[in-house]
Picture 1 (tube, one colour):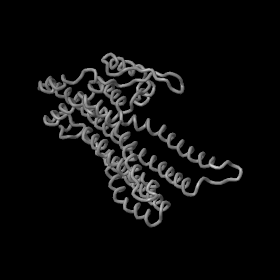
Picture 2: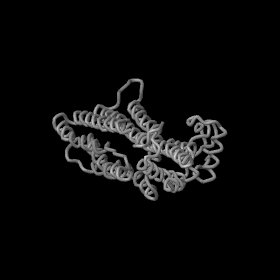
Picture 3: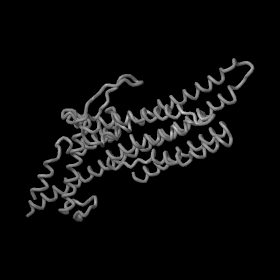
Picture 4: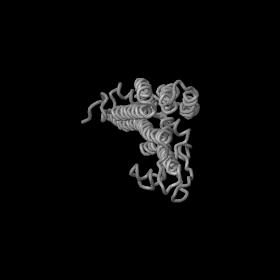
Length: 118
Length: 236
């Protein structure tokens, strides 16, 4: 039973939170967004957004850039090169974990041969 | 035993979250690819329509001459018309290019590591080479009278082939899951229809050649763009 913990330990702790992972995914798919747009698209309140965002900024995965717009200068959130690289590595590690889980019959809410619940 | 059971439950819960994240990442990748393919097809079709209008307008101007209106100085109507078409071209480019550029930037994030920068440079150079060199080649030769009226058709066929070689293949080989085919289909269709343009030039002269070239170009662009959108939709 140590193998799943070893695999889970390989996952980047910054991205290993559903909200931060979703935020990074959104920034990679959409490109730069304002905090308001990100909060609206993810259905997040300002508090949690700000908490998770500061962790991503601290890790250097997201940066805040000021861009001129028709409504005046706005601060946009953008995934950095380092963030994109970390995201890619995280997804690769995820694939290993999920493959291991499939072989071990762990989980199962999303199909893939998992153990039935209940 | 209960401790082990709770540990398994905890791991299973974690795994389910991670599995959902993996699905989200897969969906994000598909969305990025879909957006790029649709943006490229949309841009190809829009520029084909504007290019066709421009080809018709230029042919009219050089064969029939500018419209003669008694109260407007000669040449002004032609100049205004051409300016309007060229302005439309730039307006369309101003709207569509940022969409395409954003989708290309998104797509480049799917390319691993250091290859990304050099590939993006190559991709940016490909349209410049493809849409200048073939025109220089085809407008330098003059195999028969009236050639210049529809030489653009052959230049665009070669441009499309160059785009296939320099752009489409490079992207398909670097981005896993991307199967672009727009330039291959466009090249094939334009090449297949090119004898019709030559035949129209010898049978009907400049006017007929331009009309057939424009129709062949529009039909090829329409089919190439629609098949790309259709395939992108199916693979989403």
